[in-house]
Every structure is written in C-alpha cells, then in structure tokens.
Image (cartoon, rainbow, N blue to C red; front, side, top):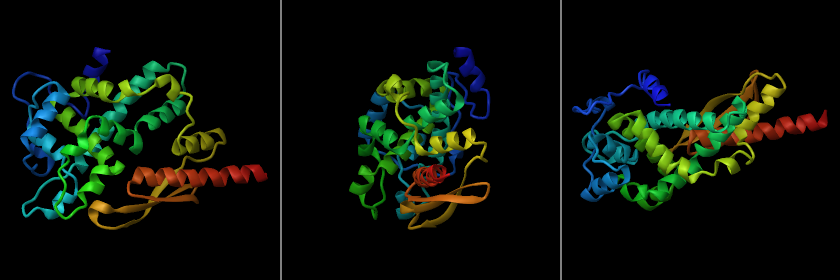
Length: 269
C-alpha cells in the first residue's frame, strides 16, 4: 500500500515529503488573512502537528464573502476546495476499492457519493468544530453561513486541500481515515439506496443509453450566495432540472427529476 501512495504522489498532485523547508504554497493566487491564536491551537490539536505553512490554512478557512469586504486582495477557499475535493475522491475511492473487492464500478461510485456529499461533509466539519474558525465577511450573515451545509462542506474540502499542500498525501490520507472513514459504517453504507446521480448512471448503462450530461443553465445571486440551475440530458434530450446553492446539489436534484421521468416512461411502455 505504501508503494501505491508513493506512485500516486509522483503524479500531478505531487508534493515533496522531505523534512526540509516545505515548498511554498504562495502560488495559490492570493493572500490569506491572519487568524486568531485560538485557531492556530485548534489546528495543531486537530492535525497532531504544527502546520508548516499556516498561510495555506488561513486561505482554507476564508469564506468567499471575505473577498468582497477586504480593501486589499484576499483569496477565498474556493480553489482549495477544488483541490481538496479531488484528493478526497482519490483516497475514498482507494479505500472503497480495497474494502469492497466484489463491487463493480457503479456500486463503488455510488458508495463514494454517499460519503462525499454536502450533508455528510458538513457533518464531518461539525465534528471538528470547523464552523467556529471560519473567517466570514463583515457584510455577510455570519450565523447563517456558520450553519450552512454548503459553507461547511466547502471549508472541509478546502482544509483537506491545505493539508495536502502542507504535508503531502500520506498524512492527508491519515486525516481522512480519522475524520471521515472512522465515522462511516461501511457495511451499512453498502446497503443504503444509491444517490440520484449514481442511480441515473446505472439506469442509462443498463439500457445502453448515452451517459447523462449536466449543463449549467443559469447562475443567480451575489458571488457568495449564488444559486445554480442545472439541466441533465441524454443524447441531447433534456430530462430534468435542479436548482441549489451548490452545483453538486443542483445536479442531484436534476438527476432525481430525470429518474422520475425515465421510470414513469418505462412503466407506461
């Protein structure tokens, strides 16, 4: 297993694992804001080590509302969320692959989606009291954002991205195993109904239909409070639409509507 992680870490998401000075994360595109000493202590306790690059964690904890309120440029956690999402998918996928050797690709994808979704990620964030350390813009509704599943899920993924950039893949894997997998009943997970996107993929595959394609139809609202409307189609035929504050959730709603339409059509045949 250790060899696998060494090979993976040599790909595009490579970070040096030496004990010398860490490679700077200053090319993230912006500056982080200073955070309180209580947050530094929380991070050290949570991670089990003193962060090598505190700045990257400051970015991970910066909600996008901050960017609109600062007189000087500051970077929100959106880019780190993108990176953390990819790293989380990789590690969860590997764990499910080894835990369920008899599951096919569709079932593995479905089980991963049950773990890596807004509600579950927000739950993991709450367990580590992440909301208490979010940096939020002065003009934003702080209480609403701290309770928002979307904001918590985004920050949790951004934190994973920060850990990865700071100390590399093996320690990030340990964090995910401790803060995610440890809280998941894998055997029960395997029997829970699939999520809508995974079910739609399985439906189309079983009937030799072209795979579903998701398209953003519209984006409305302020930058830090956007609502996305997404349409899903197969073979260019629209099947469903969904609207939510996160693209992933809008896709789930669109897939649910598409499944209902397809299953109704099947029942009428």
